[in-house]
Image: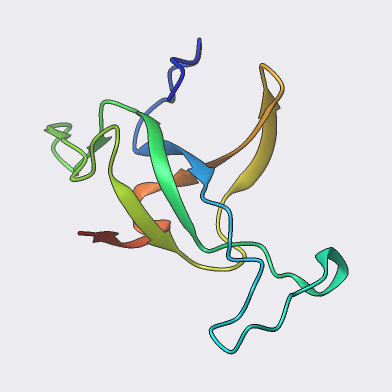
Length: 98
């Protein structure tokens, strides 16, 4: 995992998608045109956290290196240093795998 030169703000997280399987358990090869974008990724960078009503900083629960699950339409796709990444709010992450 290469270090990126980007620091997300507030409660935002940068995630790199983990490639989906190209073959089903039954041995059927899935063509690129039929593949869905994976909904699993690895956290590359995290912001400092959000603020509550009193202005107190609430830290983010995920950390760099975590494998996370997120919704199909979560986040904003960006290209940074030639890599396709997603920037999303921590609330878009459904959970940590493992």
